[in-house]
Length: 606
Ligand code: F6R
Image (spheres, helix red, strand yellow):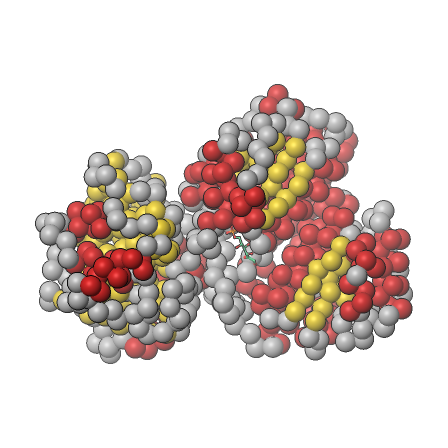
């Protein structure tokens, strides 16, 4: 959360910083700001609202300085306003700070500064840092920042500028992601490498407790204790064009369309066809270790957890290992029992979600073993897990997760297949699943091409205030994910229930005004699901079905059928129409689809 960019070099900093902010806007978009050092002082612009509002507030001629920092905010302390937007400055306007995270002892530090006569221009916790750094006597900015951080408690990713010493910026990390980048005679700081694509040649990820002095000719990294550390540089590859919307109205729609290619990349090179199994090299697990697994526990937040629920079903069905997914955000607060024969799997698109990271650290601290299923290469969670599966789904820019949900489910299918084939899953069943997975990308593309057929379902939902999403067994996680998607982008109230739970309470709310989206795969639970449809219809509730060919649709108001497939893989197909429905409803209601209210991608705060 919160986007940070910093630049020091020979080019004008403003255009580079603004481009970086636009790429990082998914991390927060309630206010934005920029500070550029020129003529011994900081030129600053800050605005409540999106980066385009900041753009409009910049002087026509622009700032000309070649060193600067910028920020796009997701508010924690202090409402979104011009004054609370970052950068925050000291009283003389010499030091500028942008910050992602929370300074826990800000109140005490503020009190102390106030007693020394400092007045504050904002309600933020961040501003104390600017005042404290400005008051330090150390000759270099990096030393001054280090001295201040020694008395700061909390989580941060930081970039600091000093107009009086513009030769270097300082970056620091404790819980908030920070990368430093190197270009041709240029240095960069960012909270996400995406901001630097096309500019920095190589990057290094700071670890917690490190700070960096970033100069045009390179960077030096220190620990908070002052010891110099050596960081490995990795090449910054990736297509900057992938971060653009192109002809699409929204990133969400673009990323829905990218799913066939994303799934193909998740599958690429990961089959061992001779043995009708999957081969996930990154999990670094020999067959013997797989055999010893007695339980699988999957941890993730939001859509990552829902994909984990799909994964738990797959692992239980294919490998016959008890598996369960739960929100990482809850897990770590209940002093969890960590068992040596349990395999923990952490799921994260961004690889930076604080709650998931903290859950992994708790498992590791107690001696548990963790695999990561992660999209962002080199991210904190990927590095913390050390082994796992990269999705290779490509950058996901829309705040809501679509293609990475599908790729995560695909990765779980591979993991379940591999675990299953070292246990009791037959070669024939393995071959059936390999063929089923091979077919997925084209089947997904076929569903997306029929988007127009979903109009009736979307129109029915758009006219309702509340909706139910029901699914049984392996379809239940898809109902939960479908309801979340609709909530996030359309702001309609949608609730998911296990279909079998309907008569245990929620049936009370079924009425002609409450449509139910019913997942009706053609599997051995179909008769049960059709009974649920009848229960809803008897109470006058309209039913919209997402189903498969050949299913009887008596009493159903509107339906969409995904192709027939291997039954275990049906959840992956049933989810696609629900993404498109959420998109269509949100579009019809004129919502801000890529940046829904109150949300941000990559939740790096607790
Ligand atoms: C929902 C959504 C969120 C994320 C969650 C975890 O559309 O995007 O629920 O899935 O915040 O994020 P990652 O996967 O980055 O850990």
